[in-house]
Image (cartoon, rainbow, N blue to C red; front, side, top):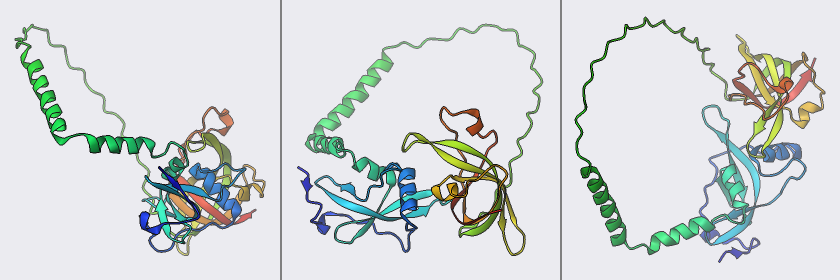
Length: 280
């Protein structure tokens, strides 16, 4: 039976996985709502403050304090949640989403109990019986000698060499925040499997990272059309300057959307958390 006492945290029952050093925090409530929507934990209209953290024998209410980013392109997130006693632990967003379901843990608990009650000798006999059955089936069929038939060899066709695809050189992307210049190419929609809806994005062209020596040409990139960006009432062709992080993350396609919201060229890079935006 699950013990539902969210106000009483029993620390000895919880296996904590604390964050490694500093982690990302939310800039404001708008940023918090955007991240919840990205993770599929809450709709844009309602930003939940507390979530269930469940184990086999108990469940606790936790709050999301921030998130960690990792991966080669720094596009993968791990949530940092806080318990009632102040302890922090890390958890994948999809796993926390599963914990909100009332059926979470019931199937795994049943499977666990069945495995414990199965005698070891029964498992061994089942494996041996299966192996013996397979041997019998194989030996029941006699060997068949294949009949050779003469065939006229066909003249070999000269293979035309396939044109080699020229791959674009891989960019050495900076890890920290940098300053960008770019132009608005178009607006698009991309399917989000977490909330099963299409999200609005902005496709940028002539994207360039401003550096002291040589500027780094990114070309095409995309970013979420957040509430912050919507305040600038962007239009196609607008010139922008902003700070942000860039990651190698390809733009997906929208689901059942009009042609004007589809991008006909691959967009391989994503700009995360643009700030200090200047529209020219």
